[in-house]
Image (cartoon, rainbow, N blue to C red; front, side, top):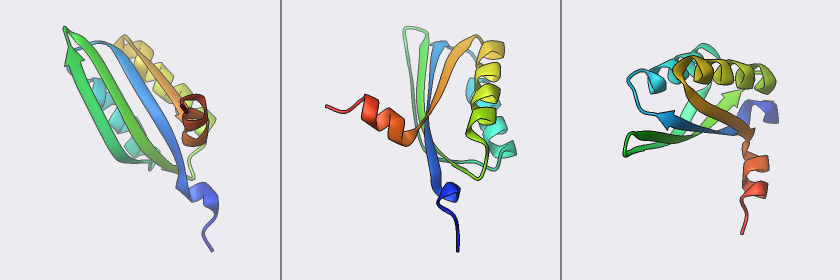
Length: 94
């Protein structure tokens, strides 16, 4: 029987100045963690990059993944936040 941990989803948001390599760097870390990007949306408005991803992290450790994402964000000069989907939805309910 598969554990529910294998269907853990997180919401990743990214904002900052647009430049090549942001998506690639984040996607590489997620692939290395065997996480699956289930949905992604990105846009650039007046040079400001914004992206939101819904990611199934499977059995990856959320805290370690968050640290890695934040580290990549710092290296890329963008703000990256990651939250468990349930927390994100609770905080953004109407």
